[in-house]
Image 1: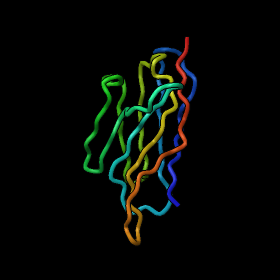
Image 2: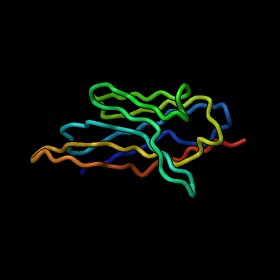
Image 3: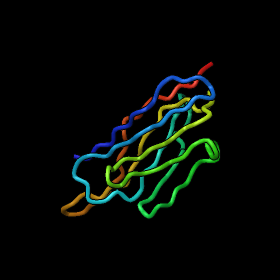
Image 4: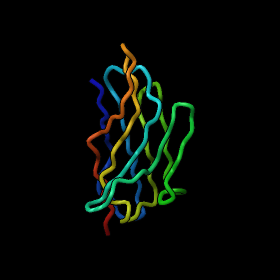
Length: 121
């Protein structure tokens, strides 16, 4: 069974940094897209960063210049380096992946359970 597990969240002061990780495990033939979403209480879930297996990346305007997203295909792991964190970044951060499984090579979208990021004064 395929699972996504996030780690690296925590409590930081404004201006601090965090590095989030997401590792996919299980029966995996191919991971096409992996991304980060976040959701604050009472708000809609929003896209933060997206990567594809051909190396393309996309970042939301709200984190552009402060965050970088990277991917280690050999380890099936996605990273999000977040710098200069602000209170508005407080949310649960979720990992998302488009994964193809072997036999019969069916694809579906998977979500992790999320990791909490809290930025407070």
